[in-house]
Length: 359
Picture 1: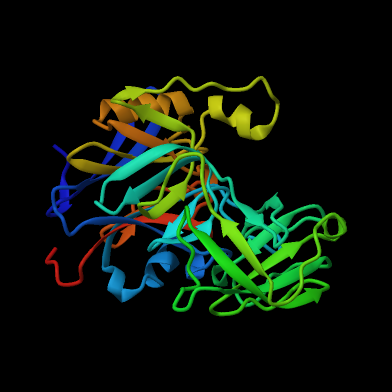
Picture 2: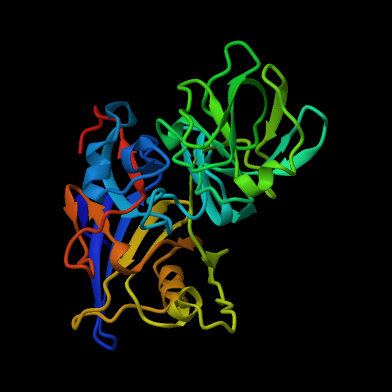
């Protein structure tokens, strides 16, 4: 039995001397319908960085009272687009960042889903031709990117051409759900980059090297954007990226590591600080492993997967680790981040309860 911090919220620090390794486990009772798992992003936008404590302070009151939180996806740490998640970010049904690999999402029934999902986002030009596009991310000379109001006041781009777009349908909102198809009318065309993003519109940005290869588009013409994915996610209301998948159908997954010297692959078989999210029919689990410390050396991904299966997870996904690994529960940080304190991160997973729910 895990000691409870409050009804339905349990926490323990498991210390394994053979590592040594220190493992922090938060378990939340899913049978309480008031408890909801949701993703959050620094500043409630697509870019930016903040400590978990600041993420929680910025949580809208209507979202509820946070009882547990853990750091989220890998992300861009520096530059103009610092805080851009590597994969999916979906907040209250509005798409903030496109999927690119393993994702966790919550459907309309409140059930967690997990799969490898790739975006198939594209735009259809007025002449009927199509082009692949990115979504709220760093631009490049040969790329096409759709920016939404979640990206902030402007695109932050340099050079190229940008089309300012307004929803064609009356009453359409500026929030795009994943899987959406929407017709957008061109209201303005700008060269040079860094176009303002309308509060109730979008900006389609083409890098300078790409512009000459695109069809001519005039103001008042209509484009269609398609946010389809390799795995249908039409009913997703909240979601986050991560990976790799660690537990499937109660079994730890064998981690396939490419024969590559890149750090992202080498680190999979090394012991480092780790974070993961898991669940079964009764509980959610937030798990963080301390590392890079004398008291705890961390875990490999395979070791983490085996531990998650052993504590009862039927499904689990890896999250960002290293200095980002941070676990918060019932008012304070529970683990020992390897940086010596909280690191500013892009996003997080939070379990909330309505404000009127008694602890």
